[in-house]
Amino acid sequence: MRTPFRQPQASVTVDCVVFGSDEEGLKVLLIERGVAPFKGAWALPGGFVRENESLDEAARRELREETGATSVYLEQLYTFGEPLRDPRGRVVTVAYYALVKLSDHRVLQATTDARAAAWMPIGKLPRLAFDHRQIFDSALRRLQAKVRYQPIGFELLPRTFTLSQLQRLYETVLERTLDKRNFRKKILAMALLIETDRMERFVSHRAARLYRFDQRKYKALESKGFNFEL
Image (cartoon, one colour):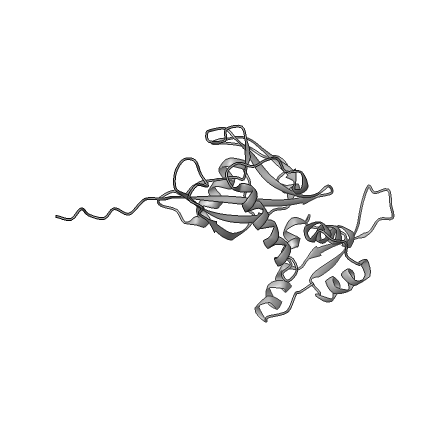
C-alpha cells in the first residue's frame, strides 16, 4: 500500500516598506521586534497572513496593529521565498511598499509584537532582521522607477507644498540633482497642480506659492493613457 503523498507546508507572511518624507528627507518606517527571532532588532512591519484574509487585508492589518498607520497608498512589490530566510521554518513573504504623508503619521503606536516604531532616514538604516534589507532595497528601486512615470510622489507630500519642496522630494528619491528650470517646466506642463492663494509661512527666505495636487484631473488623464514621464 502506497503512503499518501504529503505536501510540505509553508507559512505566508506580509512585510511592508513604508516610505514617508519630511524636511529632513526620505524616511522608512521600522519596528523594533519584541519577540524572537531577532528580538530587539529593527525590522519592517509585517506578520503572518491569517487563514480568512487576503494578502492586501493582511498587509493593512499588520500596519495598523504594529504602527497605528492607516489610510496609506499600498502596492504589492515582490515575493521573497529563499528556503532559509526565516529561522522559524519555511516562510514565504509577500512584500508591499506604502507611501504616506509623514506629517499625518508622526505619532506612532507600536502594538502586538513590536516594542517600538520609528521613522529612520533611508541613508542611515540599522542592520535589519531576516532579509528585510533586501526587501527595502527592492522597494526603493521600485519607487525610483515608478516616480518617473506616475506622480505617486504626491502621496509623500503635505496637502499643500511649494515647487521647491516637490523638486527636493524627487531629487531625494532619485538620488540626483535636477535642473530647476527643466523640472518646473515639465511638472507644470502636466497640468496636475492647482495653484492656491496661499504662501509659505514662518520661513527666513522669500515666501513661495503653495500648490496642491489635482487628484481628479490625474485620474481623468490616466484613463486616457496620458504620458506622465518626468
